[in-house]
Image (cartoon, rainbow, N blue to C red; front, side, top):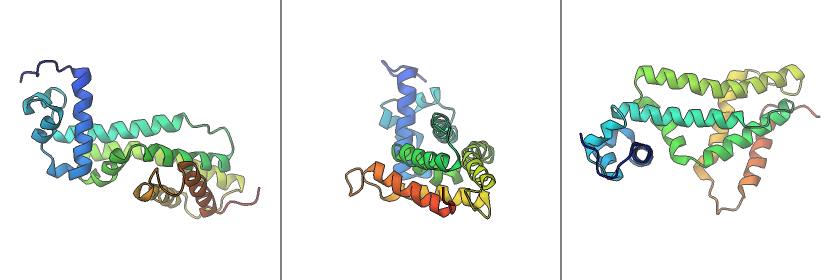
Length: 198
C-alpha cells in the first residue's frame, strides 16, 4: 500500500480524521465508505489503512478525541467558586465549547449506535466522567443548601440535554450574541435546580 508522493503521516493523518468527521456528520457513518474518505483526502483507498485499521476504529477515535478535548477543556475552567458559580461556569463552558465543534457533537450523539460493544463501553466511561463533573456540582449544591434536586443523576442528564438544545438553533449572525445566550441559559439552568436566595 504505497503512500502517495508528498503524503506525510503528521499531515495526512489529521486530514483523514477531518474528512471522516465531515463525511460522517453529513451522510452518516453507515453510508460513508473508506473509498469516499480516501477520495476526499486525495489518497488511494489502500493508503487509509496506514492511518487507521478500519472504519470502526476511525469512528471510535473521532468520538474519543472529542471527549478527551471536552474533558481537557473543562479542566481549564475556573471552578474556584461555590456550587452556584461552578454551575454557571459549567453551563457557559458547555455551550461555548460545543458550538465551536458542531460536526463532532453531532456524530457524538447520532453515531453512538454504530460503535462496537467494546468501544461503546470505553466511550461511555469518558462521557460519565463529564457527567460526573456536573453531578458533583449538584451534589455540592445540595449539601450547601443552595440547590434543591430530587435526583442528581437524572437532573444532570436533563441539564446536559437542555444545554445541547442551543446547538440546534444558534446562529452566530442571529438576534442574540453568544455571550447573551450563555447568560440566559446559565440562568435557566440555575432556576431548574431551584437556587435558594443568596
